[in-house]
Every structure is written in C-alpha cells, then in structure tokens.
Amino acid sequence: MSEIPVLQEPSQAVADRKPAPRRAAGIAHAGFLRALWAIVWKDLAAEMRSRELLSAMLVFALLVIIIFNFALELDARTRYSVTSGVLWVTFAFAGTLGLNRSMSMEKDRGCLDGLLLAPVDRSAIYFGKSVGNLIFMLVVEAIVLPVYSVLYNVNLFNPGLILVILLGSIGYVAVGTLLSSMAVQTRTRDILLPILLFPVIIPALIAAVKASAGFLQGIPMDEITPWLNLLIVYDIVFTAVSFMVFDYIVEE
Amino acid sequence: MEPKPRLLTILDFFTIFILLAATWMVFFYAPVEAVMGLVQKVFYFHVAAGWVGMLGFLVAAVTGGIYLVRSNRKWDIVSLASVEIGMVFAFINVVTGSIWARPIWNTWWTWDPRLTTATIMLLIYAAYLMLRSGIEDPDRRARFGAVYAIVGFLSVPLTFFSARLFRTIHPVVIGTNQPGAEGAFDMTADMRLVFFFSLFTFTIIFIDLLWHRIRLGRLQDKVEQLKLTYNA
Image 1 (tube, rainbow over the protein chains, first blue to last red):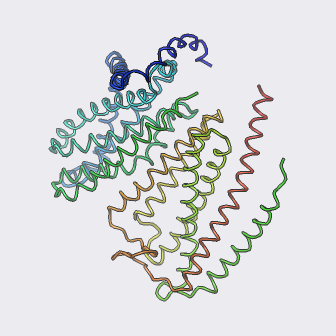
Image 2: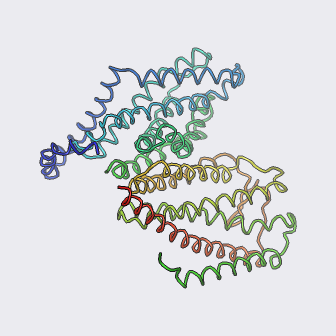
C-alpha cells in the first residue's frame, strides 16, 4: 500500500547491489558494519533531538522502584535478598517500553519500508536496531543503578554485577528486537509485546536474577558460573536464531 | 468439500478402540502401586499427555521451519493444528499432575522445574494464538506464527534447565532417579507394558486429531480465500 510510490526509486539501488558479492570480502564486511552503524546513529540522533524514549524509560523505571519500595517494604534486612529481583523486574518492564517505542517509531511513518528498500543486508537492520536498543537499555541501567544505590544504601558497584547486566541485556534485546518488530505489525501491537516476550525471556531473567544475587551476596564463584554460562548460551542461541528469521518478519 | 477419507474413518474407530483398551488396562491390568495406591494410576495418562503436548510443539516448530523455507500454506495449517492439540494435552498433563500431587506431595502446586516449565510452555503457546489472532494478512500470520513457534520451542529446554538449577522434587520414573524425589517408584513389567501402551494410544490420538484439524484448517483457508475474493 504505502510502499508503492516509493518503489520506483530503488531500481537504482538494486542495480548498485548487484556487484556487491564480487567485491573483496573485507569491503563487504566494512559495508555491513557501516550500514549497521548508520542505523544505530540514526536512532541515537533521533533520540538526542526528541529524548522521548529515554526519558519515558527512565521515569518509568524509577516509578517501578518506588512502587516496589512500598509493595515489598524494602527494609534493611530484606533489601539484600530482593535487590537483584527488583532490579531485573524494573529493567524488564522499562525495556518493553523502549522496544515498543523504538519499533513503532519505524512503523508509523513508513520508515521501516524505507529501511528495507536500502541496498543493505537485512541482518544489518536487525543488528542495527538491536545495538540501538541495547544502548538505550544500558543508559537506563547506568542511571538506575546509582539511583538505587543511593535510595536504598546498597552498594551496587560490583564488576560482576555489571557483567551480568550486560549479558542479560544482550539476551533481552536480541529476542526483544525480533519480537517487537513482529508485535508492531499486528492489530494489538502495544499489549502484545510483553505477552510474546516474557515467557520466552524467562530463562535469561532467572539466570540474571540468580547471578546478580550471587555477586551482590558474595557467593563463591563456582556457584555463579552455571548461571553465567546459561546467560551466555541464551545470548548466543537467540542472537543466532533472531538473525536467521528476521528476514521473514520484515519481508512483504 | 472433499469427502472424509475412508482411512480416517478407520483410524477414528481404531483410536476409540485402543483408548478404551488403554483405560481398561490402566484400571484392571496394571497392578496397584504398593505405597501410593490407586492415585498412581493417573501416571499412565499423565506422562502420555505430556508426551503428546511436547510432540505437538515439536511438530509445530519443525513444520513452522519448513513453512519459512517453502512458503507452502499446508505447512502452516499443520503447524497451527499441532499447537492447538499440543496445548490441550499439555493442559491435561498439568491437571492430572495436580490430581496426583495433592495426595502425594500434599499440595496442588509447587514451583518445581517441570511444573514451572509446563506452565510457561502453555503461556508461550497462548501468546502464539494471540499473536495469530492479531494479524489479518494470512501470509504474514503464517510467517509470524512460524517464527514464534520456533523461538518459543527453543526457549523451553532453557527454561527447564534454568528451573532445574533450583532443587527438584519431581520423580524421574524413567532412567535413573535422583535422591530427594518424592513419590518415586519402580515400574514392574506389567506397569511398563501399560505405560508404553498409553504412550502409543496417545500418539495415535494425536495423529487422528491432527488429521481432523488439518482438514478443518484447509476448510478455514478456503473460506478465508472466498471471503477475500468476494469482498474485494
């Protein structure tokens, strides 16, 4: 429907695309990275100007933490055992907000069609959007962590915890980017993403909560390693699968 | 409408017959378990239903993958059919498990890895059906359904593994049993016969239902096509 008027132009783009495989592999590789970076840069630039996504995620994350304070009565004794759980629930909820927004932004004004017409590999679009979403999530987490530390007087500056947050966010964003690009193309778009995402993300969340709690409570490393391994396996499996099936999600 | 194949009619009667036979075997042929008593009889259909549930979801993921490669509508019909049948049996599995757990574990529900995984699996496929119902375009619905069937199915073993890192009390009746499982027992030769017969019976039920559901799916497809041509 909306893509018909745009269809005339890319004939040139298709013509440009042809010789690409014949070029040296190194140049094609550089082209892929350049396309990926262009998409990330576009998302960051749009966010720098509007600041609507990050600010919404941040305010929402802080509200969730405040609600938890009253819902769980986070007194000094319980704080240590539930901190990792509270953090991950906050990240997961704020994350769906960001994922939904980042994808519906593309869909609403036909930007996704424009992206798809670009003479780049489709997987560059997937990885570009994923990296953009990952940056937004990490920014939110980087602000939430010190705020949480101050509000609850818990020291969260722990390199192990940061590693877990990085691994957990990668897995979350890998699946989330794929599923949110499905969700925005349905009738029930906004309510559908968490329903699709949460049951699939549960193994990563369980592992992330347990590993974070392990680092925060100073549990010996050999009890944390299985959880870290599980997170790494999750990240690899779901990045690979999403990369393989993303083409089918965006094709018309 | 194509007439009902003769083979399907035969399969229908065969399914009814062996289901009755399996029920008879469970109640009258298999010996009563020494410790748990009559409630142990739930085990035969409990495991068989769980097996059919997993089989349905496996078939859905595999046929979903084939659909993505071939884009032939018939694979999507098979995929959706297996998800629906798998969900019913997975639900039967959870309910019969609860009936057994009440006297044996003294609770209807516990956050054991298998129970957790079974529930999350049901939620994944409930999400699958909601995803499909939110899309009008049949091709897109099929593609998204296939992708979600694959992604969802892949996450099930990981969910199970992550939940298993917690302590488990669910008995492993087949294979070696871990210490700490509550309600474990060793099957006698008679029990094993009934058990495998139930597995066989439920597999036949699955095939029979799948066949019916695929025929229904084809009709649904035809109706949808007709609506699209006449409304356009």
